Amino acid sequence: MENKKFDINSIIGFVLIGAILVWMLYTNQENETQTTEVGTPENQEVVTTENKTISTAAENNFQEPDSLALEKAKSSLGAFAYSTTLPSASNKLTTIENEVLQVKVSNKGGQIIEAKLKNETKYNGEPVYIVKDNNASFNLQFATADNRTLNTKDLFFEPQISKSGENTILSMKLKVSSNEYLEYVYTLKPNEHMMDFSIKSQGLKDVIDGNNGILLDWQLKAFRNSKSISYENKYTEILWEYEGDSDDYTGQGDLDEDEDEDVSYIAFRQHFFSSILLSNSSFESAKFVSKNLVKDDEVDTLYTKSFAATIPLKLNGGELNESMNWYYGPTDYQILNDYDRNLDEVVPLGWGIFGFINKYLVIPFFNFLSGFLPAGIAIIFLTISVKLLLSPVQYKQYVSQAKMKVLRPEINEINEKYKDNAMKKQQETMKLYSKAGASPMSGCLPALMQIPVFYALFNFFPSAIELRQKSFLWAEDLSSYDVIAELPFRIPLYGDHISLFPILASIAIFIYMTMTTGQSMQQAQQPGMPNMKFIMYLSPLFMLIFFNNYASGLSLYYFTSNLITIGIMLVIKNFIIDDEKIHAKIQENKRKPKKKGKFAKKFQDIMEQAEQQQRNNKK
Image (tube, rainbow, N blue to C red; front, side, top):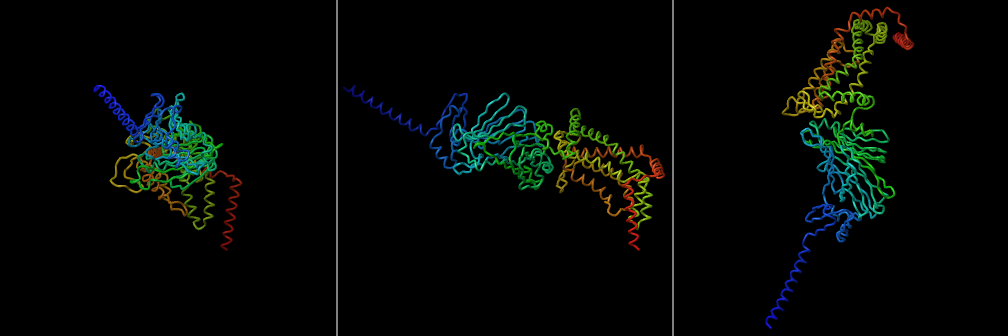
């Protein structure tokens, strides 16, 4: 009987202990982190957000989110509350990259938060990032059907990577349900700085208020990448193409707002690097704002300018469908020109004939030279070639100057003889020029013909990315200033260093101007004429001060160019031009009867009538 009682008590005890264990397991389960595993281990991605670990899987295996969390989020986000309850509701990054570009996209906002140029480095050896550390923002602002105003930068997108051949495709979806969403699609191709980029929606016709449209806001603060932030800032600005093939830009100062219609692309240029947003059908309109962030070169050393572009996007049938491209890469003429979308205009090569000379003459020839020569030697050979090409023009200029030199004694006699009669003095001077076959304009015209080439090269060297980080002699980087001495203080406009190439260029310019203007300065200064002595000293001084922070490649060009010009002048003066022969030729021309043209005869008649009128007035 006792054994039977013992068995019953044992059974009751085991039951009670089991019940307690079950109760403890149940209550403990509610306090543990919940883990949902959907799909196979191969397609699961573990994401950690705060204290919760969630496994996400393919869309077709996804389970609907918790209804209580969804209702709570709807109070502030409406239909887009669904996106906050998904496993992707975090700041997790997705990286896509190829041989030249690495891009990181955040789930929050679906936007690029890091764009790294893999083959480029800054002046200090650090990698070149166009986007990093929240210096950029890409946001869509829109109104919803339930009277809310939302910004995509505050919402969470769901990433999905796929492959199409060698292309990497990243889809970022901002969902309102499992099959209704706003989607960004980034497509990165091998060895390309240009990505395909599209914005489209599905099933949002009744969610987004189509009457107000969508406002795209793209902002960027341009990083400093070069040694001289002030020099880099001169070539940092917003550029855009509108109405087919017209171009505009914000300039160097602050621009509160500019606006154009039918905009094809928008470029945030950071001198040697650019980020460009292109529309495949053109944006209906766009507004631009640019702010200069460099007020003090010693303090403002991280950013150059702040850019903003605001673009209205239109819905089509209640849905959004924008096909675009996005470029992150060097401001390289050859790379940009190969896209055949007028992106070569982003490179500041000059307008009109100046740009034409650079695009079709200078750049191809310099690329040919730099293909087998060091950059510095290529600059010297380019300069020599230009001077040889222009030597016939310069010869005519020097011959004209020699004629004027021979005629100077006679011109001085005329000036003295008719010093009280300006009109008669002018008339007799023109007669002398006509008889001698000389004209002061014949010396000016050759000089004017050289200006387009000189100005084209002035634009070419600061824009030539081929010179970036290329050394020559003491210059470490031909795209930046050279340094032979650091100063313990900063001189306004000059800087805190001494560059040698601008000094050499200044000396060469001074010698050249002394040779060309020295004799003319011996004459009395004519009323209304510029002070040649002042100009002779001003040009070298300008070169010395302002070019101290410019690209050493540009100063090397000016130094070489003026050195060659001085040599050509000495050769022409001492071995080609004979003053006695020129004088004899002038005397021969004087003896020949000179048939006057209709214009010259009419001009002389007018002068004689004016002289006669002047005599009558004196009576």
